[in-house]
Image 1 (cartoon, rainbow, N blue to C red):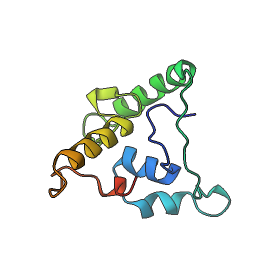
Image 2 (image 1 turned 135 degrees about the vertical axis):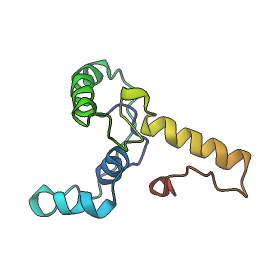
Image 3 (image 1 turned 30 degrees about the vertical axis):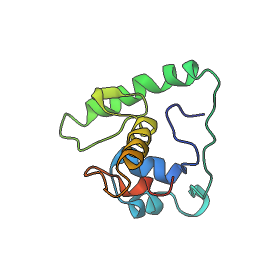
Image 4 (image 1 turned 90 degrees about the vertical axis):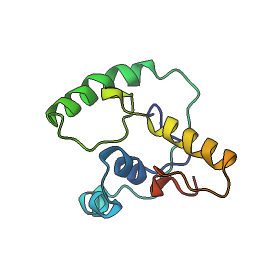
Length: 114
């Protein structure tokens, strides 16, 4: 169970967006027995406080380890004032509804079709 993960997003896609890297970079690291496969997340409407409490110090430490030189755009828990994957998808869908003929300038290609 992962908080703020959009319905239907695969682990590969989640990592690509969180790390702001190319899909192939993730695929190379998780091939063979470690493969991330095609599993997609199903949104859990339950309470995720325990998972969030476990993830927060880890995510904060990861962001600190980057020393501010990061190009990260997303964060599972909004660490470092970054938007969550779920919020980014909601903004993108809202923009698409309000301006169906225009592509948002910041659109993440990885969210296409989700």
